[in-house]
Image (cartoon, rainbow, N blue to C red; front, side):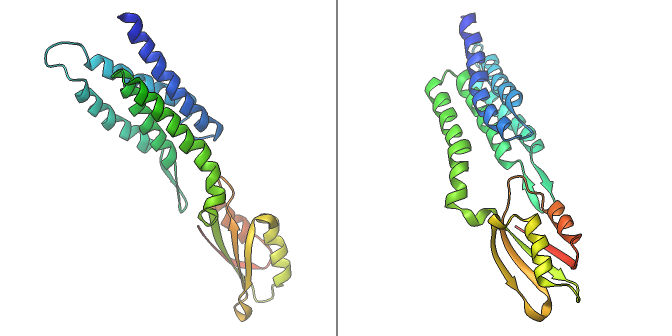
Length: 211
């Protein structure tokens, strides 16, 4: 019936919105509208392939949707300095398309369960990562000092850039005149921008930053 088809598309868009809101809150490039459109589009493609005609196979259409979403997800991934960003957003788009396909095939329970599980992964697991995997978010910073630089002054300036509460370790390399800092990376930290900021500190001759 026509109203059932409309309800399927609306449901798919609603489930996609649940994932899109989380991405929107995190200020990701693919947010609420993108996830809603991906889910609704995937459901519509699947419904279009399920015409009831002899030989009609909605799974063939689903396979093409999977291929298409790969290109869309690839556009959400980009390289920023030594960082690769957007992998989680690309994955959420892939799952959103799968949810839309499930709705189109009237696999209601599977679609709802996948949405709930994806929300748990995106929201709760992300928050738990900071406690369970603290080293995963660390950056190693090596400051090479000029010959006449004062270690304590450079340290003071560096801690102004990297908040003291986030610093894990400070080692002095003695005659090499360098400082090693292991600091917790803040969300959205750009390593090139961080290195450029540290390079302009008085007494700093060179900077190496690695995650």
